[in-house]
Length: 309
Image 1 (tube, rainbow, N blue to C red):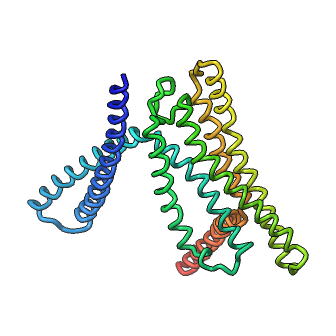
Image 2 (cartoon, rainbow, N blue to C red):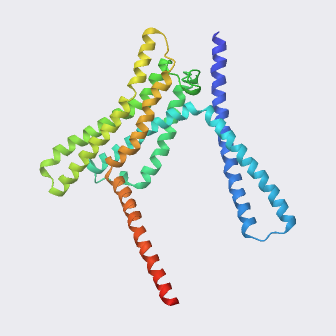
Image 3 (tube, helix red, strand yellow):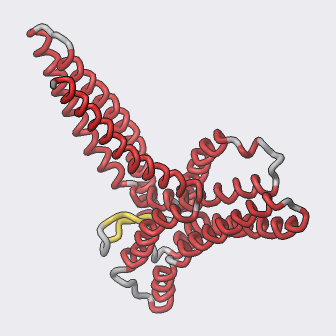
């Protein structure tokens, strides 16, 4: 029985590796075939091609189109094979992005003299480094513990909620760790602002008050993301006590996350002033360009009518 489990674990690990490598090759094939196919269509449409050459090019385009479609289907199959791992990694990266945001505010407010940590390039590269680290940690935890499996009641692959060691390890890496870091950073920023409040100028005080307001909003959002995991955790504790798994455990656990994603996409617009200003500016430009365009068109039409008369 133990040997069977070892073989089963090794098979899962090998399957994940093969799916990941296949995903890379299929993605490469899909990109190349898409680029070549577009170039061929552009060449046939805009350039004069001899009849013999045109037949050859058309046949090649059919081959590349087939490769494009088939590679896309294989990519979908590869992704479905490793979807459980990708889902938990991306959810972890959501909290890591909030952590990056908190880190930037810490540097800007408490350590404003340090320019190295206020570079745009840093916050472009940082998520790439983090996703490599998070992926390595989660895979090293989930694969040996068989943390991801096909959920028969839900009909998709996802971290097994009834695998307690896997769930607890994933929770620490993906949720609890980043949330504690975010909470610690914002507590430090708040304490720093209150300590500096009596010696700052009016302009800096106003900016700090705005920062505190934004921090409160972001903390509320992050806290809601954490609280929304309570239904799933409740069912997991019930499973530990009773030994019976609820048939809708996975769907009940994921439903609040889906709700939070929808709410988060709207809430951030009202929580981050820079983002809100970009959206409002775009809306304002759209509403002002249309009347101006109509006025110009009207003037051109009037000029045309006058010239003809």
